[in-house]
Image (cartoon, rainbow, N blue to C red):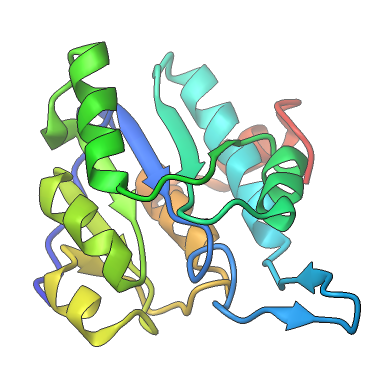
Length: 186
């Protein structure tokens, strides 16, 4: 676990989030009819509202989306609710993101990836910077550039966004301006 400093937001062009174990606590409830449910942190929605307001205010053309190995309606519903694109059924995330970077002629240096499990390791190795929750697989913890103190699904995404936009360094007035911006829904 190296715990490098997150690059300045101006040096980042894309942020990619895994879903299970990042937005969720990596657990799933299954009822007798096979219907799945997961637990997500509602604060992530406000985090994305703050991010949208920050990118708009700073004219920052940041791209961000969720990428998941599994196709699951709960990921789609949550992504739609927080207004974040969600790409599912991606078995090889590293190949997908390498093609994404190549197609848009973007450097891997400007890519930040948030993941928690072994299928995220190959992406973490190509991304310019990688972030993991503190309950990630021990191998991911060892290879992540930064491990945040939050667990997946327990404010991890929100904490990352606040770190990314430098919320701690903002004045109360700046925080109020961002939080009142009409950029989305919680």
